[in-house]
Image (cartoon, rainbow, N blue to C red; front, top):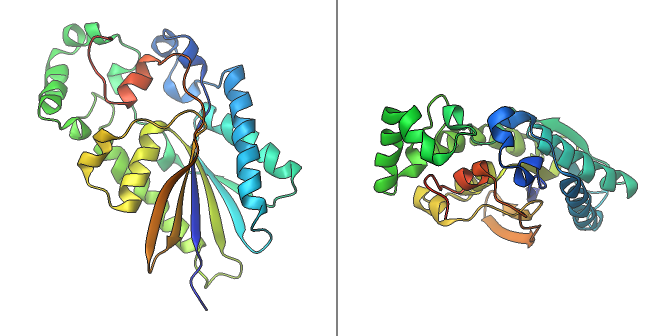
Length: 250
């Protein structure tokens, strides 16, 4: 039996309320931040795009949504699911904790200028790595490094490869991964075997943008942006940190 072509659509969540109110991250944990009204509309727009892309290959291809458990990704997935259902595209949905965003730990919601005063040793360790272009490896106190995110995101790779195997009765061949900016960059880096330096050169994907990784395990994969998504009206403090910017805003 010939191998299945795998298609992985990587979707960043829509605009969140923290993009509109920079103070929100100081009072509300990151996992509970919901979409804004605009973000909900963005999710439906991304759903229309995905429905068009998936409808062209049904019913011979199985579709599965893999979603981060955070509020804003659940809501983004719900918007996509509504559009797929309206087109009678069969799919199932599973949550994967490996797809959650970078954990900011004690840096969560704290203005950059306060970090050296509140966490002098931790901040200096972080800055030491950044000075040598090694922010990828620098952990936030009680949080994570980008390297740790890259380690854990590989936990879903085995699921994708297993579920797409032709040894299954009806393999899943189209995966819609609804996740976050740092996590999507780490996913691409690990799946495509990009070097760690590549990560720091990549901008965060825009809200509800879609990238497509497709190909065969035997012959390799391509990595292409297929829907540009929507730029943020404002960049929240956490958005700046996802992009690798710790320091006074410019």
